[in-house]
Image (cartoon, helix red, strand yellow):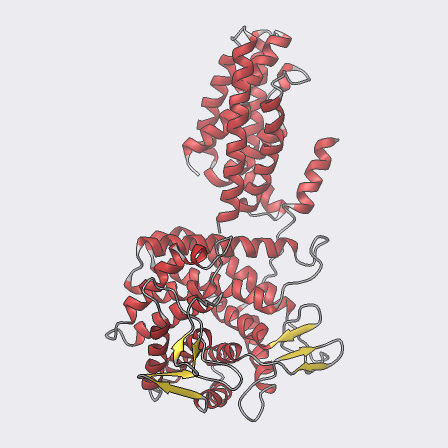
Length: 165
Length: 361
């Protein structure tokens, strides 16, 4: 795994296209956008910071958890690829997803907190920028492309989990 | 609610807790002793061993397999059980065939095979290492020449030589004999560096790493613990990049198997434990690759994880061995799967524990 992979994985899993669709549906005010980004940052930070403790508590090696994270990313990536819609629920929780939590834990255990937070800054900046998009088509297209990237990341995680010691 | 169910399903099916019983070098040494004692106590007057035992019916198996005979000799020499191994070796030496400058083990009812003779080379080389006795140096190199006569230009190893036609049987390869022959070449090279064994070893290593699976019709790349041994043996003099990459692949494969084993055996999805032979081969490969990762800087990043997996497997093996004063004497020291054990269960489990003991230290 590399920093580039972490950026790609977080870009895919935060899915700026989906954030854009949610923003068009709900029309959040800037403070709500800030809360949503902060919620995403907190989720990723907690996952990354406490990854080792969490995996120790579950008695799972990072390599094995990578396989589970890959499965979660794959399952959750199929729907936005086929059906690019705004997610249900409040805009503030648009980034609070199981796949992002699993990815944060997996990356945190493998890459360390610093690199994960660096990659998170890139991903959240793109997600925040997506709230400025006012047309549905580009947001929907971006949702599908990023969902496809999420499937690729998912497969890479599973293969890596199978091939690593 | 849906996500809670998904999380539970993942926990049960994909990431159950990994259970690695803690183990000491003392416990491992005792397990090695008990495992080899099972083999020694079952040895017959002619030097052959008890082949298998069904604990449920208290019956022994009357089968025999001479590749496993050679493998057991190797494990006994490595464990320091020299008299018993020498008794088994006498049976082999009484059944050697000589032809065209080479010698080969030609047991009754079988024809000379690369697998049995490769493991015989390993046994004789470990005997030499354990005793310092060089009396079999000529015969072991003659057996090595048999293996080299079975080697083809692309590095593949023909499995059989037919005494009736006095030729190698074309197009027949063993699942394990290529890796076994590679290991034998590597051991011969370490002891006799001047006799061209290195070229033979690297040629077959390259075949294993790049062509074997497709050439021999395997849909999946084959895990090969004998190849892991061979690579570890060649490491002090340097592996090629292809060999090092192959070693990394093997490390990942066997590491995953041990993680899986530590998660699933005796669990709800896999109530039947793996055999001692299957567990043992995982442990043998992992320990050999752990040793290799200490020699080759390209693989140094794997050493800590390989040490952990090796220790984990040692704990599992010690836990699964039949032990205790009240145990059935015919079962004590053995590893059973579904009520049955056979000589190679003890061979591979003991060999794995010998390797793990190094990693635990």
